[in-house]
Length: 342
Image (cartoon, rainbow, N blue to C red):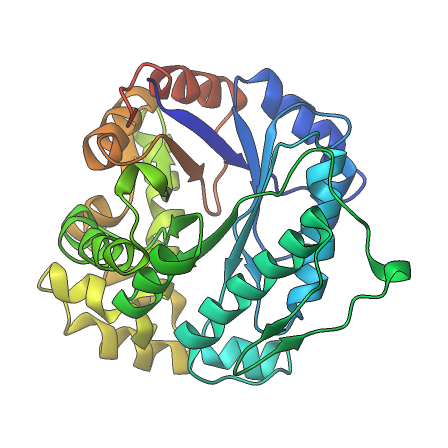
């Protein structure tokens, strides 16, 4: 089996369908949205009936939402796409939940595990036409009158995936979700030593094996074919790596690389808005450990070596510096030649 490739769909509402069609023409197998500058569901709703690719939220932030909201959006997108949708959920970090979303934060792994279970219970109730009776610690869903029940989805129930980095969240994903969305701020050492160990622990708890569970990495890529292009791409990715590295929740990745002393220094610089100084602290060694860098073919080779034995698809994105579409064609084509998990 060859590696499947998902590319990020990040376009204004008046361009999103056209851009999705362009990405399909480049050979992409799927598209994913991120809850950043634009809504995470609405672009996929516009694209689903028009562009025949697999679609995924990567990720929709769960904690400010009700599981019922997420279930309705997933049901609609699964039907509109003809069964090509995956619901990817994530927790975000405390400052964003409290200060950007205006929601409450507590025990993220426990809450996310229950959220995933609640969404699956709601979708399952609609599909099987059985009474809804989900009673959790954080949410309860016991009322579903016929007037509010969309009924069975002709395209079936969409998979529900959970994004995670820390061992508790990753283990939770492997216990209750259909797959793990691997955080892009990661390294091969962290992925092998910590992420996959937590996946196996969660699968043991759920009585499942790795073939029953999807592992979908997301990778930052700095792509170019000459020195100027690579320098520009590196600079953009370096800024994002510095931003991620400043976050206390992401310290374990730096610990695995022996760079834990960077986190407090980066965090202090964020307080001053010293973006350039932050980027200067990310040397080429750390950049290469987190991101993939080089020509499209070199990036595909790096992705294959990191993830090919455990993943059947990969989400690739290009923070702050999008390569020309002709390079995307080359990258997708090269990844399609990479052996992936059967």
